[in-house]
Length: 298
Image 1 (cartoon, rainbow, N blue to C red):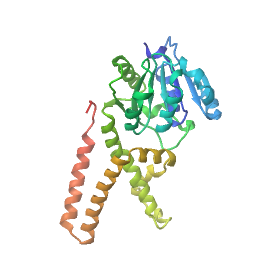
Image 2 (cartoon, one colour):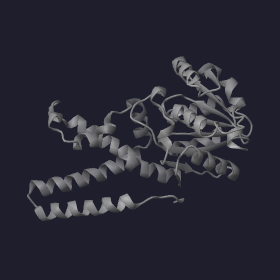
Image 3 (tube, rainbow, N blue to C red):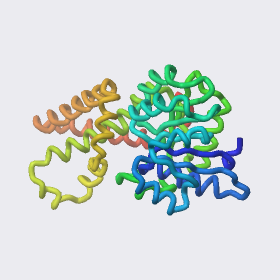
């Protein structure tokens, strides 16, 4: 199957769904001789009007008409919250095209590994994926194909995945502009994302919440702004992500609290040697982290 001749379905036209649609349109379906199409489904008709106006989608469907879209799609991106994605798969299980490749964008993976075997039909394939890209603002209006350029995409291969479908997905990911594909397990994904993403959002949110003076940022020089950019958070989504990954995330929080206590004690007791050692160790660790680029399966 050639990417340029496939029919792509996008379920959910938020910032990620919109970006997928725009990227596929610009990078794949703009090729000479392309016979491919993009079908889009969304609850909000305003988004459907925009994706049509922009020339991104060939056909749009409201949520109650998605059963008309799915049988036509070779590849389906379900761009919903994690549990909503699973509910969608259960509700529309019989409507996917035979041989279809379906994928998600969720920030937690353990729940998919647990639930998918009992949901999927044997003649379709679900590839667990996580695009590490996007922006702070929500909605289709803020979607961009450029979000994906030079970014990382995580794939969590399952025993039921067909090799040819995984290869097609890798080709599609590269065609959309992603330059790194990290292949790992769902457990490792949730552990590492719990640290690099979810813990960071917790820390940024706690820092903002700890401010007793709302005008304190008048004295900011950039540090506060850099640390708290991600605190402008989508509360319903991140609540679900935090709770869905609670064991791994809470373990990271507890370890972070121990390190905060170490810094606090060194400062409080004026233990300059311990404090200097902590800061030097921090610098070395951060330099090492910056040089690591994982590209192979862990």
